[in-house]
Length: 404
Image (cartoon, rainbow, N blue to C red; front, side, top):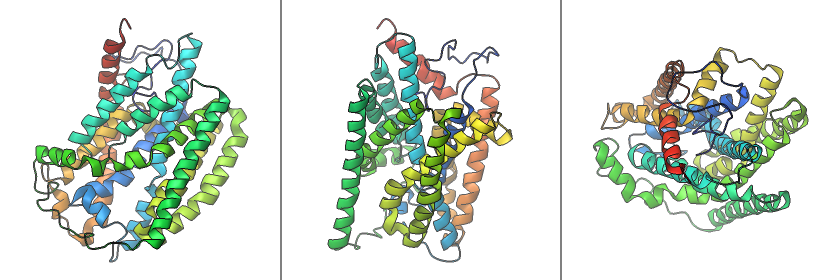
């Protein structure tokens, strides 16, 4: 698992990540990295919460995409578009940065790279598989595990080879988006199955295990995004690694940060927001996988610039840092808490809310879940160095790699 989400203490000299009490002798950390992890975690919830509050889950969300109406229509479109794809991209970039940090640590220690990293990737894949079956069908961890394994070996090659991989991955991704655009333009769209009822509805009426079986039975549908975004993920992993090595978090990286903010926030963000809100669900593929990654780079650069100029974290920064340090635990917990609130095996609130109240209900659930994970991370880190899932992962990794 990469340092960017699973194990922020991994391969850091002087740290022995256990569930033991915190030690004041811990070395300083890059605040911006932890803050960005926290932003990415809460941002992905901003996208996923609309799935979790839909009475038909991901199936209903996809069928109703862009089809909202009523007094809350534009509010819903704007809120969804503000989160759509940006924080998925940011999380992906952070994984690439995590790989670069681990590679740098291995190089300084004289260890071969990628060395034992395949064990990390295997554990991440297992984490993702369990998360997919038991918690969320929109899990990203399995895809990141495969991507990370590939990119780990790419990072062991020279700069020229890495550039070729980056250009190749971007080219494949752009070609896929272009092919989809051509197909949508010239191939008649079938709407007959758009509103096909989900009967029985495991999200509203099924038990916990009914929903788990439903995910397994429809694994092909639910995992298709991971296949589609593989090339984009490889590119963003490599971009993250290159930006970290180029000094995007250092004072001398001001020019890089300025360019990223201009491209991401000055150019891509307005285009993304206008296209996404005006186009509804019709343009989601091109905003989520086209313009959104550029916005992600702008967000990363803005946070890096802020903490280069202001190296101390305020109240909000400390809360985001705590979420970032327990990122994997918070990622799983936020989806689990929202599922308990919304799905039939829990309180079943999603099916009880009228369509006209769904937007304020969704905003309320988002704020409540965010508060719960922020408070949980704060209280946990007052006692322990790692989040609970991070600790379990670390213990498993050490057990697997001992004497190897």
